[in-house]
Image (cartoon, rainbow, N blue to C red; front, side):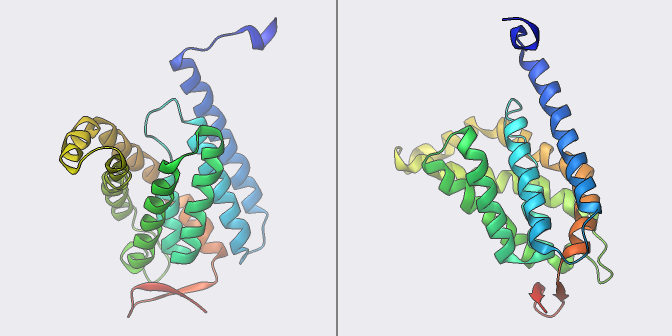
Length: 217
């Protein structure tokens, strides 16, 4: 076999290629979004789902790094818990068709859904009355949620191991948790403002300061 099919990429080459493809995919999605009329909530969510699925698959060579946590957290903050949960579930199922599906899919979907709910509950803390995102708070949240998500998914080990094994399992995975947290920090800094601005253009909800959650109007 000749040409590109005959070239074997190492780990570094795969990471660089897939990162470039992910950035290209994001650019294409942003260009599509810029041509949409405002108030197209479902289409905006579909674009986020596409970005999340593509991010998980293309960045799979980088252990525990993906944009999903930041995306579903922002979706929950802007669109509310129900839309955020739907997005989290679609991204998990869609990406695991390629990455591998099993009982862990349930834990991942529930974990990211809980992050979406957290985004909805923290909406007015994260986004001010003028709709401006507090990037510093997003970055702190992303870093913290990296650990929270991984520790929740790690509970799946209890299906085959005693409870006493859980602390050992968490200690063994701490480096990967740290990588996830710093990855979220980077994605928050990179994608936080543009994603928030995109979602602000398309949501049909308001932030209810009294209850501190987005409500449909």
